[in-house]
Amino acid sequence: MAASEKSDLKEQVALLPLSPGVYQFVDRNGTIIYVGKAKSLRKRVSSYFVQSKEHSAKVRVMVRQIVEIRHIVVGSETDALLLENSLIKSLQPRYNILLKDDKSYPWIVVRREPFPRVQSTRQVVRDGSQYFGPYGSVMMQHSVLDFIREVVPLRTCKLNLSPEQIARGRYTVCLQYHLGNCKGPCIGAQSEEEYAKQVGMVVSVLRGDLRPVRRYLEGEMERAASELRFEAAQRYKQRLDALDHYAGKSVIVSAKITDVDVFSLLPDDDVAWCNFVRIRHGSIVGVSTVKLSTGVDADERDMLTLAIQHIVEHVAGGELAREVIVPMLPSTTLLFDGVTFTVPKRGEKLDLLEFSRKSARIYRAEQLKNLEIRNPERHTERLMNALQQELRLDRPPRHIECFDNSNLQGSHPVASCVVFRDGKPSRKEYRHFNIKTVEGPDDYASMREVVYRRYSRLQAEGAEMPDLVIADGGKGQMGVIHEVLKALGLDIPIAGLAKDDRHRTAELYCGYPPLLVGMRPTSPLFHFLTSIQDEVHRFAVSFHRQKRSKDFIHSELERIEGIGAKTIETLLRHFRSVEKVRAANIEELAALVGPSRAKKIRDYFEK
Image 1 (cartoon, rainbow, N blue to C red):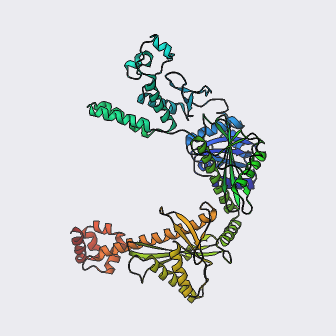
Image 2 (image 1 turned 45 degrees about the vertical axis):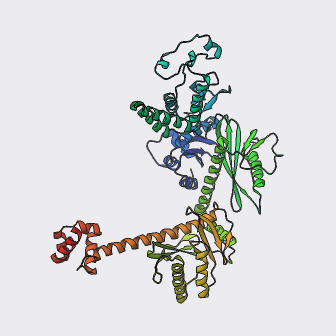
Image 3 (image 1 turned 135 degrees about the horizontal axis):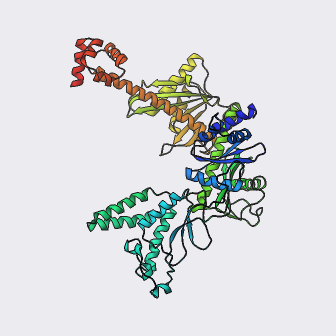
């Protein structure tokens, strides 16, 4: 493997997330040679590229052939296992051996028959029965079945319980009836309507709706308690606890959705990211994302249509499933003859669409991070130009400054200024400010003082002024900054970042009077501005916390009569904290500050 290829693979590994998922190794011919699952993608994949005696000869040969690493992020280790299984069966990679057989997943089936049974199966048959799963292991499936059978008494026998057979009186009850695990529908002791209600509770559990069973268990627990059957009430309580830990189903494989294709669209400033998920026989067999240039004033429905065309021709092998799940209808369906487009509102199809959207967001974030690592100058240039365009500035804002106030109910008011140059924090230029002229919690007055002190000083020193000033607040803070800059005779563009009720950055304003900028909250530019806001807030809060702590320490020791500043400094230099001064005995204190002061300190803390 060439040195350049090794370097490229290291960059690919560094960009992998720490999330669970499936990874694919690709050789020089573009062929996937290995598929694996991971609890943490980055940690697992990086282990292949570390020299280790535990690596077999086969692994070392495989690693030498890798030129590209692809991955798919999922929600859990179970989903990773299921997706790995699907992809190995579909792709048949050369270096996979464990899952190449046609082993089926474990499912739970509610049979379509009189007095339906709830059973384990590995065969999904289109006979009208209801199938739930799949489950990542037989143990997980059996635990769910055991839970259901413990909570809801249903029959487990193979008898034909048609009304005619029951009416003939051909059957007698079995041991399960005497144990209380079945209510005897075979002898007519339980009606079909009552049994159907119990089956309905089981189906609700398997679909993830636990409310009917919860109501049933709570009712039985209260009834048992009122009848002083406390052991029975405790058993129902334990079942309720088990219900709280019941796990839902996976989106990776479905019994209802067999052959569909899924497309999601993630528009960005001048590009769009389209994700494609292919489901065959109820399993995901392919996931890919493409980047498209959107042009000027592009309509999202047109973008989706062109993206589907491109993926069909270059990724999907020239074919589409008969049903395609999309976030919106394409601008035209004439290009896709015989295809039904579905915009889901709920259920498993919406879950698949959300999975596709999540995959697109992850891919976009990784590509942008990759661009930043490989070509930081180009990334910065693009970011600065986009910011200049969105905020209608005369030049790219290479030098940005942002202000924030911090106080606790008016106490210890402070402010901070952070400086960004070429999109990166310039920490040596950060500044803290103690508020000197404002009494009480007045954010506007504090901002007025700090901005005046900052730029009057830069003026006096003949220093460089920023290309953009950002207020950590909305129109009010922008107005204060505008007044100060105007009074100083400075013409510096102003922007403001306002937060919603949940303290999340929600709106961007620029200019004066402030104008709302219609920027997508998901865009890289908005993320960049939010990172500036987060940084100035962090810097201000840390300074405020430090000042509060320092003031508390000094105020505590200053309360001791006869102890001056020099003694306090000596104590803190030696003991490091007030708590250690409090814990010191009189001999330790006397050796440091003399017996008289030591007695005063001990008397104070003992009182």
